[in-house]
Image (cartoon, rainbow, N blue to C red):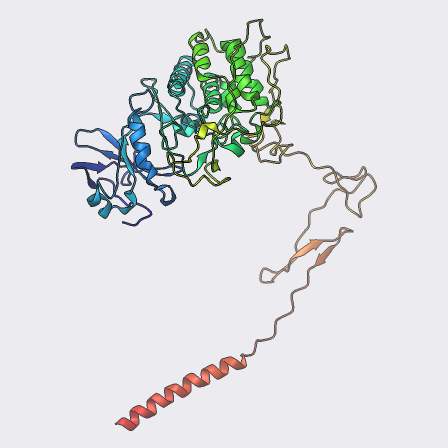
Length: 509
């Protein structure tokens, strides 16, 4: 084993803390181990003798830091909160597990935790899996309960996205994964402060990160809206590839996808629900997004629609009072901002909890440029007509369904109908004649009769401008290439060496 990775075979036995585990085979690739790759490391599925499944996670080298011990101890204290089964974990260190790390060096600061059943919301989006309205409401409520429970404890996952939320179709449960970078008073600052992922990222998080108490508000708003709208075919058909919104259209007030989803929430579920989503979309900072407790209150008041309308989901807003709340003072976390791809700002080097270290939630930043924040009901605008239209997966622009490329960003959006080329004329053709058409009164094309012997070689011919056939001349025969002088020298040396060897052999006799 190397410091970088662990190589295990399907069915291989591994002993951890005196318990024997078997490496589970991949369900779709028999004979190969069940390994999942994440942004920070790799997860291997293990099975105990009683059938219980466990997850063995080892991190990439840059993320193997001693702070994982502190994080694990802090997470254990919150392991009983809904959605945090992954917090019931064991971390491997050289002091406590020397035998394990001598055999698997890459497992340093790795963790052993329960394997979570179900699939990620990312899997549902990418497969465009249909769900019922009841299922969508159940998942949305459970997701909100989990995240509102964290926010009530001054905790935040800080990287809410489809890949980090597990949903169980059988029981309706929701679990969070990749919890090593959670925000909390007892949590050390991460190596890289999460800045959100494509399709769920607030614009303020691009520069400031979202390692803060309000770090889940915007991502949760988008995720909950996706879950509620996913039972409608119109939403699924107009989704981007890996998330409903394209990264380039996040918080765009003119986004067609935002209007489509917001109209559905308003007309099918509740005007207050659409109002919460709109306030989050138009917010300048994460603290201006509705608290998750407000989302939970509104979600409890909705019920599944009798029938989900598919053709026209736009209805004029009623005069229902919008949800209101008092936004907190904007605050942001410190440090490296990343979208799982790049580092923006260096984290402070002062250890967390050391003398002189600042609290991460005490930092204030300059306000971003003003953005419209409205709590007014939706205006009485005409329904969004997408008949014969197609939304760009890259920027969200509305395009003609026949066009293969986006008219705004040029992104390839699918095979379209080939546009007819404008007619052209040959230089020698009569005036008004077009390609593929004969001029009135013109002589129709005549068949060409070949007069040749079967043993003759016919050279290629082409059509001249005046209609005569022109024979293509044969290429001149290339003169024989004489040998290179250097080649003769090499050959002479080889022959001389052979003769020398023969003479030496004869003399020795």
